[in-house]
Image (cartoon, rainbow, N blue to C red; front, side, top):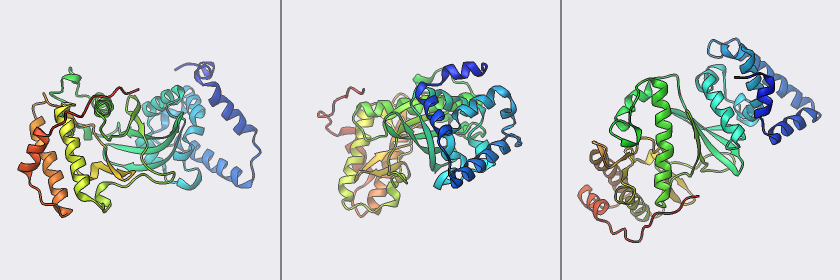
Length: 322
């Protein structure tokens, strides 16, 4: 990392202007209180084991540059939630460097509030050049990805697999970005991928200004048959056209957005040449049939598998994605 002047050169004019305007704005009593509490929180990070690196001048300078964009996850405003332990676990040094890179490129402007937390990643509502975005930050401090090697090994797109944890995380994130791009190309309902860097994936946000869209498992649909048929076609197009299988196709990984299902969490999706692709396909179809049966539909695995493998998809064409 460089000196202060180097960081200044990296900042966009718009970012520096926003910071300049913010400093010039006269703060009322409430704003002064919030600003002081935020400053206390930031100072306290230097005293924690996980964030001791912030004491280094070069990293302090970087953090000061992106502090405004991270105000939502520092506890400012109505979405206060972060404590030092969570901050240490999610926003380590390499993650902040990756966020800085994405902010500098304009893909991310701010991180506003959390919308999902899991073993593998935290997902945040953010803003970018074109509006709201979902920012998925994969954890770098645990070994959960070692259990997911089966979804990477055998994929010809990711040869020379390294087993160091950080390498697995970076490969996994690139894999999810490429899987989203591939599925989107065939017109399938997935979040539009917008950017990726190291352990951070940026994609289309699905939800309102205050909350993400619900998952399929949490909603009661009015026309279960139509939803089943749409999801069955999703699996068929994925297999026959995109030559892929999702690998974890369940109501937990399908969101209900705009009165239709949108499939998420495609990091584990594999190509047909993967040695376990057929096994994963049978499992995906089985889970869809189980959901359909619970919704009151009469269908079975054999019938659904036949549809996925033999469905007429002559009307489906690959799209040019900008």
